[in-house]
Image (cartoon, rainbow, N blue to C red; front, side, top):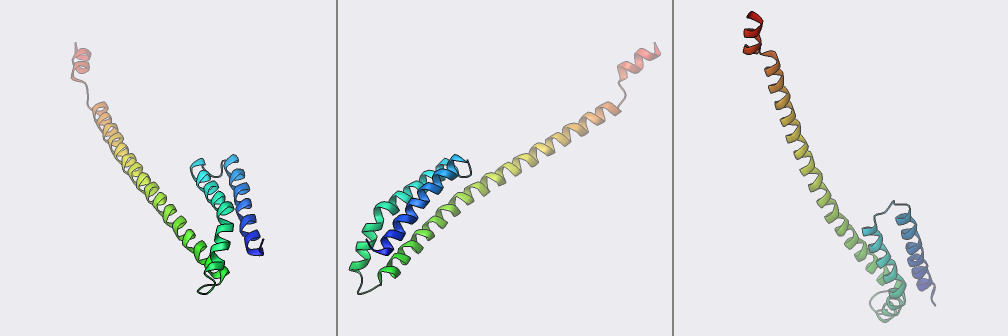
Length: 131
């Protein structure tokens, strides 16, 4: 087993352990935890494959450079997925803020209407006090 393969597998194993710990402490949602567990499983199973594949492209890339290129592409995909999730959350927050503003406007309108009604004298009450 090469040193690079051992480092990849140790990294994948530590990712598995840290993901489980973060999910159990509720610092990471189960949705993302499952994704990171899949990534760590892919790392554990794919590390030997990546090591073998990188030795075959030795004429074009060094094994370390090839592995680094794969990891950079993977990190780009993770960033893309997180950007999609963040965009969805931003849209939800914007919808909630607009809804809250409409509710606040309605409450103010109702309060103003109630204040006007309370300030106006009741004609029936005036008539009863005179009689």
